[in-house]
Length: 211
Image 1 (tube, rainbow, N blue to C red):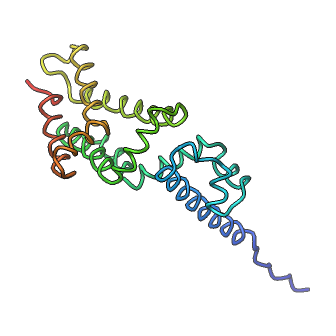
Image 2: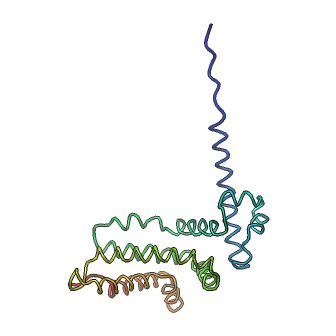
Image 3: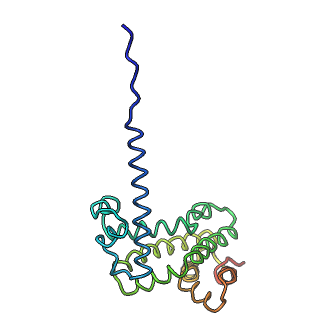
């Protein structure tokens, strides 16, 4: 008796289809979240409002993101990827300290340039809304820690053991790579490319290791 031919399973296809639909829903929900932040502010960003705008159920949003804070985290992650923050891993692996410092600054100036007006709005809302403020502050702490690692790699100006000097330089690098610093300079310069070059020049003078 001949063995029965194996029947191809439909499960991998079905799973792939579900994942594709899930990705589409995520994109649609995050687009709706961004639109609401841009037009109506953070208070209008509710699960019910997002469900209406993105044409999904509230439960779907809950399943994909959990809470309102989860939506913000996902939106910020998307902005970071779109703005080139994924290059940071490569930058931090640079063995040349000049390339390390220049790359670190460029990642942030490129990011601030790409969605400057939207980021300005988010930071403005974050200043008065604790939940959004906490999400923004969490990212600032990561940048602060990364700035300290960069300065550790650069070495000290006069002595590598000068801890106070490193602390000051790390704080300076953190401040000079902030959105607020970039945005204020861009208002005066009128051009984000000129601003990016200026930020790098200022950082080199203030932070780079000197003999």
